[in-house]
Image (tube, rainbow, N blue to C red; front, side):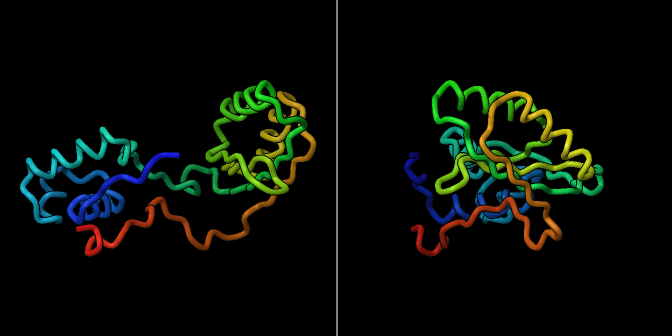
Amino acid sequence: MKRPADLDAADIRILAVLQDDGSLSVAAVAERVNLSTNACWRRIKRLEDEGVIKRRVALLDAEALGVGVTVFVSVRAAEHSEAWAAQFSAAVDAIPEVVEFYRMSGETDYLLKVQVASIAAYDGVYKRLVSKVRLTDVSSAFAMQELKHTTALPLPDPKSAD
């Protein structure tokens, strides 16, 4: 497990601004966090080099792209060998509709989040998945309504960071 990053109040303010709008220029970020442009750039570069900032992306609207049906898929593994896990991971990686993929504790071994256009489209994803790897159980739940969705991670209180 990775050790938490050593962040000061300025780093936390920068991260909060970038989580809200990753398209801002360094100068705009610097102005919002009350730093010089050069100091802000150095901090952002360090946060990227340390892996705190993994990448900057555009967040797309699933409905606007015609893939507004969200399916959560619980999978129970047929076995628990490294070879099976590698085969399963490769099968999941090859399915672009799977947007999140987790190994779990408890009754479910794996949880997948799938974005598709329809139930019929999900059936196609299901058939591709089960044709590639042997599974004990696959259970799907369709989201009826999205009540909260954020990509922003909780950050420490900047007042307690210094």
